[in-house]
Image 1 (cartoon, rainbow, N blue to C red):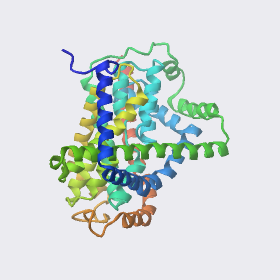
Image 2: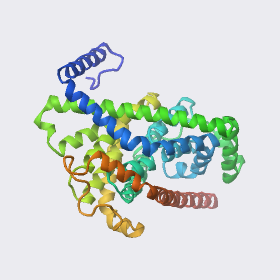
Image 3: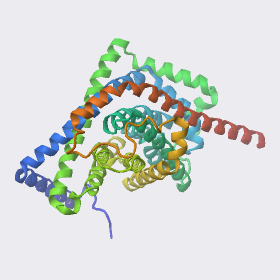
Image 4: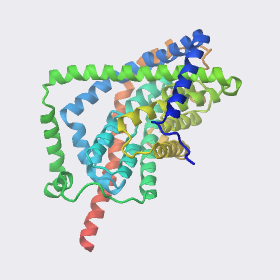
Amino acid sequence: MRKWIPSDSRSFTILLGALAIILVMFIVIYPDQIFKSSLHGLTIWWTFVFPGLLPFLILSEIMIGLGLVHALGTLLEPVMKLVFRLPGASGWALAMGLTAGFPAGADVTGQLRREGVLNASEAQRLLAVSHLCSPVIMIAVVGVGFLQSPEAGFMIAVVHYLSALAMGITLRWTDSSGRTSVPSGSSTETAGRNHGWLRRTAGSLRSAHRKDGRTFGKLLGDSVTSAAQKLLGIGGYIILFSVLHRILVLALGPIVSAEPVNTLLSAFLEPHLGMYGMSRLSFPLLMTVAVIGAILGWSGLSLHAQARSLAGNNGIRYSRFILARLLHGAYAFILTVLLWKPLTATFGVVGTFAMTDTLVSPPNAAGSLLSDAGAFWTQGLKIWPLLAKLYVFVAGIFVLLICISLINRAYRKKTG
């Protein structure tokens, strides 16, 4: 007996049609509630997400056009081969996830799968590993905007990347499939044998910039346009899933209307809504940061849909992606609790938080959206040094992994 309804079957089409009719009925019956929920999503997007992400999305587009992200992908080749058991070309997807954030890694994963660089199992693991949150979202939007503390966002970002690494290693050892997709004479592997690692990095930067071919003025204009389009798409998802959340609350009633169930439901659907709602609850700081880390690891059904659409089917199973997201969220929660004191002591986070015992006041108290927006801009200058510190931390992890990879390669050559 089949457990899932095929997406191309008549039953699945009828099910989607019935769900669409139910949604329309709720919109007609509760127009005021639907309007308030869409306005809530729009306010979060316009107040925090849009101003926090726009300049950094523009910078990310410029970095891609100049070839810097491609060069970073080449630098990550040893890590991809040793740690994640993936071909070196997949470093580009991880680099996109580290810079642009999700779902950029899914786009590159789908492209590599269509080109035959990855088999289905490798594409599955790469999609899970490269599905990362942008450091700007974690520091600027979550830290400064939601929690009124960029240092809190820095802590969340550190744990997010560490838990992603733990999740990737777990998937690497639980997947027994071998390397079958790229023939021994492929261009990627041949280039790796014929040229040095650092020389290939410089070559990938030059070739990517030459292939792009745009002048800096043209690149800047296209970057602004592309960043604005991406932000409009993000805003559309936030508003849509804010409406879906309200419909579920209206349909299920008291079961999900009480906190913190209401916030967890919004986090299950859309991460921005869930993290914002979590920052409004009067929980201890450690618990709040740990839950927000878990929300980012899960990333919400809205981002799942985006990742699935960009990666395509191509043998990639959604059930494995769900497992990876659950692992990422669980690792993030556990690592936040375990590493709270050592990380805060190492990076000097304790004592610089805007709040000590609890975070932001409940929604009906004095901490309104306008005051949150003011805090966003007054603390915005702290973003840049924390971003630099975060990238140094991530670079240190990858340098350590690369050194282990090179030592392992030298040992294998010596032992024959």
